[in-house]
Length: 492
Image (cartoon, rainbow, N blue to C red; front, side, top):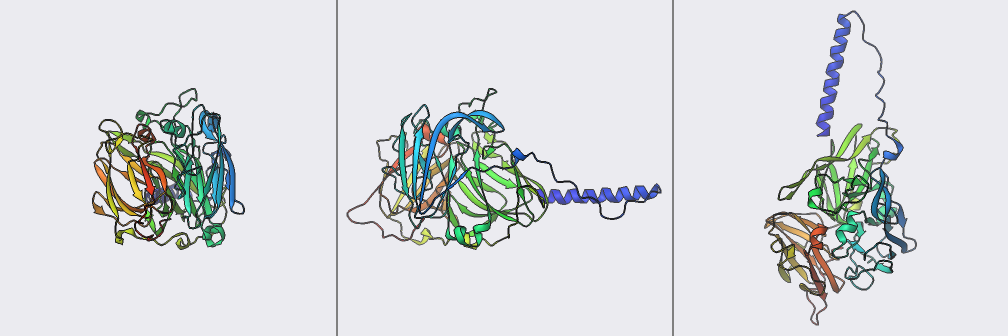
């Protein structure tokens, strides 16, 4: 770990200094007196510092933006390369709004194939021109989306990406992704408003020597570059004693990011756009494809520290390598840092509505399998087939079984959930998720309330090639003539 390494280096340096002084005295030369010059801070080229996507804010309750989906060259990983972009960048712009706002998004499709837009983490209608992934926007066409954000929507980090069945992996692998932040009152006007807030979009593309995108395959796992905001190993500057909030999204097609910052512990305060009820201090933050984490980072020790993506076992012998995602410099006066007072995380937390004590209306088992292809409950995805019918406001318990040799992250649209068991063993998580890792020959159980919206949407493996090949199902929320459970509590 970085802390023990720093102590070790200091001890060696102190020992060598004593030895050199003894040698000088033995030779009749006095060691230098007075304070010694401090080592110069590292020289970092200006374009190597972390860049963040453009931020577009809502104004008077409305955010209007045009997103142009286009295959073009973009400056990514330090060079001009072929990419699939929103508004010409990898990643696309960050949209910042408040609960209760309206988001109007005009999607212009300049790709060679159909696309659409999924607002991953939004608790909004799945129909019409809202988070409707059942529709496609043809090549050359324009479509106007409208997202009416509930006033009690959870504040946090969500993201947008394409979701066309059969072509989602190619578009996302090319770089089409961007983030959406819903702010809390504390973030807008409270004590946390002045805290340095960073967005880190993690992606893992691959190019050939001519700068053309490769076609995704599992065999690329060991060689894919891992990028932060389109940069290869960017540098991040912190001032000693400063606390920053990092909002991190795994926007890769298939990679798992287990993040460790050498010499530091991270304080996680939210997952998948949902605030925690208590802060969780951890050495490693794990993000499956599609997952998000919001962490507080504070350093009191000057030095240079590596942010690692640790090896991740995908099953069947596929293991991603250990590599450095970013380099963090903690030095007074470094370029790009400013004074920020440390703060307590309590204003950014939220009480947990614990579903474990509530009566369950229905229990289901959903099985992800690789027998006969990539399937759910033995069936490949069919756009016109409804696989699960649920009642509005029903509290349901789902057990997700992975009976395959590969890892699968399970994601459900519109409704977040509370994980209650892993392999039948109870767990006590401080918040909700919308994406959870289900390891090979394992199971995860969660509870959720299908609140507010009727209509049809999807659940699937968020390794996008797996869902493109059929590991996806359709659920429909219906409003029965006799209502199900009363609205017990809001998950959002």
